[in-house]
Length: 300
Ligand code: GLN
Image 1 (cartoon, helix red, strand yellow):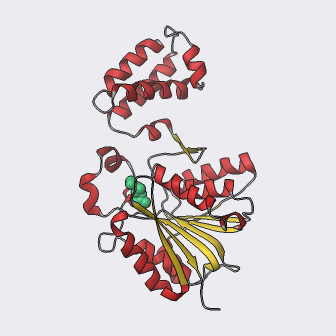
Image 2 (image 1 turned 180 degrees about the vertical axis):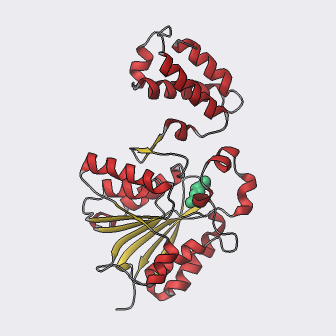
Image 3 (image 1 turned 180 degrees about the horizontal axis):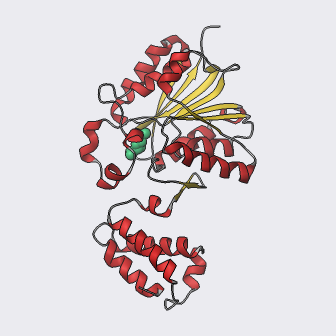
């Protein structure tokens, strides 16, 4: 391989087992854009006989090798797009999903969100939720992202640093465990306006239906809920609310497992007190119940 033409040919052959030809062609272009640091238009304007340097060839070979071993494209490129933002990703974090972009959209469309000043993202991973909300909500003064994974934390940090450089807005990365935090009973003063979370929610028994690309390459800590209690994280989030982390009238939004949607709603209402919260389950674009919106209304 030493020209664009020969690379595209090699990519097609190499990726045929895992990708449709049209997808493989698209991937080859994305790899070329990444390695040459050019846009799609610039790439398409180049002659197919353009020579690739030995360094470019070596990098492209490595990328093709990783892709044919099943590594997701986003990890190979080192970035992905989420809610219109380019974010760094690496194998220590879950690749942000389109459903989570829908969650961001729901939150941004909700009339009360715009006034939010203090927000918390629990289990931030790549930082995608905290990043997108902090970039979009005009009144945010304090934005905190909780993450326990040592692999994920530096990636979230890198994204938050990029956000700070681009917009001047800051997200504070708090490297802490949710369950350990609950032990302390130290809700913030004043309490938060908005809590958001996309915790691990796949039951280990569902692993059989997952693709090897997800199962072998993405962090299980971010994917799988505890076997004994697949909604344990949601009960912990409800506990945060019950401890006073969310102000009266504040909103909590979570992404959840459609299989446990009602059980999740019931358990959270149970923990907070049925009379102290209003909840709504919301469908995603594929028609599955995927989100829960909870408004906290404690007795005054
Ligand atoms: N939505 C992710 C998936 O389908 C799972 C993420 C999670 O458990 N929060 O792979």
